Image 1 (cartoon, rainbow, N blue to C red):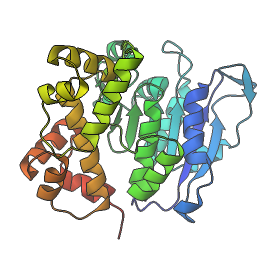
Image 2: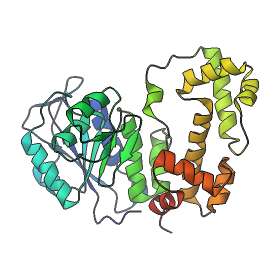
Image 3: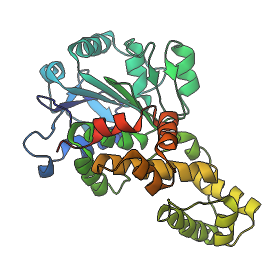
Image 4: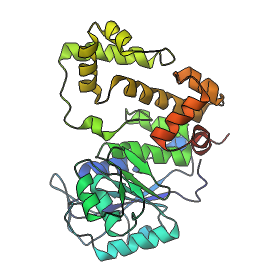
Length: 322
């Protein structure tokens, strides 16, 4: 659990506000959550310009906070931006630069990355955004290390997410950083979301919808794998379980999940390993054995490759105090 003296989260509001992205932020940080205790989040919305302010879908709204809240915020979130070619006000760039110098955590969801980029705060840093914007962002801001495959990237004091729904993953990640795995899991359950969603956003690009009969058989296969992660799975054994030939199985598995079979299995193993590291004290060898990654050395390899962090550092960062 992070030792933050206060937990004021400010969401920026602007004319043309992205309604879904803002809704994510309000849902995670704006609702009263007694389970967090007295240090739970305070939430304010601060307008970056004078009204009237309109949101996508024809809504008009009034911000609840003031510029003073922006100056004292612990976290500032940019829920999208009104267009990849829309200029970012100089006053907003200046305010974000000042906040960054104060140590404020800055977060962007989807196209909100264009605001951080305009402020020059991502130069030399890893960052992600919606796959549709990745090439455009890289061309306009060549000093940013754009990684379009990631659902979100935590670069310490600046965090960025991919397309809209990946903003939920990032917000839950922030809750996990601040209050530990148990609270993050509680928030995820209320959102009917996985507490961890590993993988790349490329799996969501124009994937065909499987026929209902195939989806049912494959859903059973996915559940079969999840409940038996410690077992040794092969394409052949899973194809047999699904009642398909190996080539047909691989093709339809890829159509459903967006990734090859063994890659998906390793993602599920990492997801389970993350949960075990957050909530228990088992050795790395035991965690690896439980999720089917054999040993600590193999566990470290997959953590470094996929999460860019060691299992030990992950446990230290996310395990609840006590």
